[in-house]
Length: 200
Ligand code: URA
Ligand code: SF4
Image 1 (spheres, helix red, strand yellow):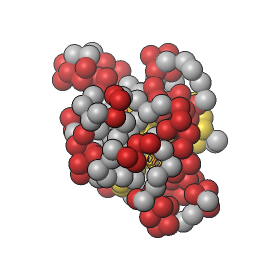
Image 2: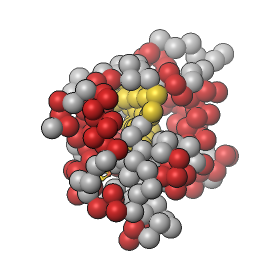
Image 3: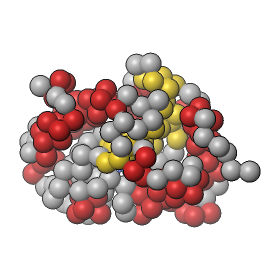
Image 4: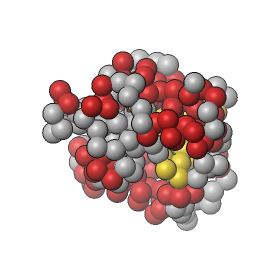
């Protein structure tokens, strides 16, 4: 059972996983990366094209924005946090490999034990959920991200800060999106909680 595996076995299990249909079209399993003892964990939806090609989370366009938030905004490096997704293989519309889509309920149910075990092993002090799917899953709600973002929530005793997904920010105004200010506000709350110095 995934539920009790140690870090190494969990990763190995995921790398050969065939528990949902996403395994049929994936190129790589994107397990997640960063510090397995990180204080801060980011959770997105699922791999996109670049992630599927490289086996690394958040390395495409949305990933560049997330990386800037971590590095320029928070003054951390990607290797100091942990970055994961709800599903480890890439979901696309009709699995044709063109348009990304959120994971469906079956895929989420099949894959979430990996994420839950990652959270259990990492035991982060704070979790940031990026966008609707990860926020709804962890907080067990059907409310939308616009309602939930910016307010502390709880996942089994761990504080959760929901914020907009970087892809959503990029789709809504790109680099100049007003949503970026909202994300920055949410991130500053996280920095405060972790005792990280805010930029003056
Ligand atoms: N979007 C996600 O939700 N996760 C990734 O890893 C990349 C893009
Ligand atoms: Fe397994 Fe998750 Fe990939 Fe589905 S998405 S095949 S459950 S690793």
